[in-house]
Amino acid sequence: MNRVGRALLNYLIKGLLIVLPIALSIFIVIWAVTTVDSWLNVNNILGVDPKTGASRNIPGLGLALVISLILLAGIFVTYFVTEPMYNWFQRLLDKVPLLKFIYSSIKDLTEAFVGDEKKFNNPVLVEVEGDLKRIGFLTQGDLKSINLPGESIVYFPFSYSFAGQVYIVKHEKIKPLNMSAADAMKLVVSGGVSHFG
Image (tube, rainbow, N blue to C red; front, side, top):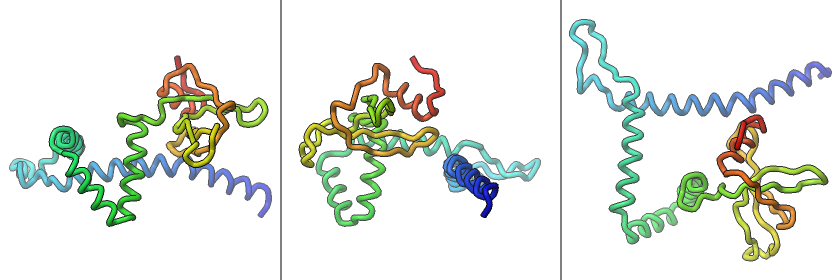
């Protein structure tokens, strides 16, 4: 393959890496809302418009239902789920390792952003090589339990993505940033073009 062909292939791959996650995210949201809308089948409730014969569809009803179900789940868990019920659910998950792995991964990621113990609330600047520094988030400050004293875990999100990498870094290479976690995340995810402060 000649140089032009390799360059075009490289551009195609980079374009796919940017466009595919965005398109897939949009597709999943649209699919979820339209699927829930179709489950509701408003025609059975409201019927067909006698004048036009068209079905009576209420756009966004599926989205409203999903948000309502999430709110009801939050209220239910807050006021009705007890410790024995939670322990029973955990024992049930222990019996199905694949389900436990998927559930715990999603739960941990969700709690990292919105839970009581947010993990991405300590923005730091890490000296990588020479004068090169990276903005990341301190997620584990003490690694003595895995026999790595004096080291921490720092998560480095990628620009224009929700993916990232985890590094184990010596304490002396980590410097806290004087900015909010939200501003630091915007700065990194935007590729450094987001305004902060």
